[in-house]
Image (tube, rainbow, N blue to C red):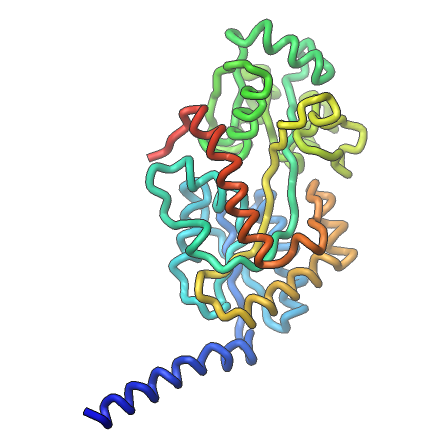
Length: 326
């Protein structure tokens, strides 16, 4: 019995030494970055820009794995259930780690406890765009028109529970209107119907809205954030027009599965921050409409608190809208 106990204690001690050893040598092979969206979309492009430079910093390739579905939860679940060895991370978003926790009756994971936060990376605002023949050219005019015509209006989104849907829910609540929602299977068909005049407006991620704004097929009314975007510097924000509560955006962050050794988390965070500070990377991300977060917002502790605050922030609008996904 004594020998059995000794062997067990020895095995336990050896197991405790695995994590430091792994962390010291990490990474020894490619690291997978899960993107919970289809290839080619703005979040996928964002991830690939980060992954290329991070691979150079780490000395091992960072490979993108696209796992779309269930509003981002399929990708989130893939990482939440992965081995906590530092070789699987997620490019988390407001969909995977905030909206999903209230929107779905039975989330596949707990965004606050099933992950090891690494770093917040950037915020990407939404922009209010309208059909080109809607008789408004400013947020003030849009507000007046929406209040007078809300029973006849409708807005589109990339799908129930998407960032574009919840951004417009926030807008509706701030204006005190109740405008009909028309969900689509993705941004593409929603944008097509806006251009054709079949819907009245979208609260669209800025990177996918800019080409249509510049082409004149839709009209831009306001950036739904606290500060102007570098890709649309002349477009006022909702906050400038007195609607400080309209803060609609998506964000990106890196997270590992819970239990990932702290030294690995620290190495990944340092690689991400080095990448974020690279002038070429910053320029590419800014062209996507992204605002890189300040250094004080890049710690794992900050990200953990941020995720909790985002879940709380969006729980109210989601519940008030009645948007629930089984």
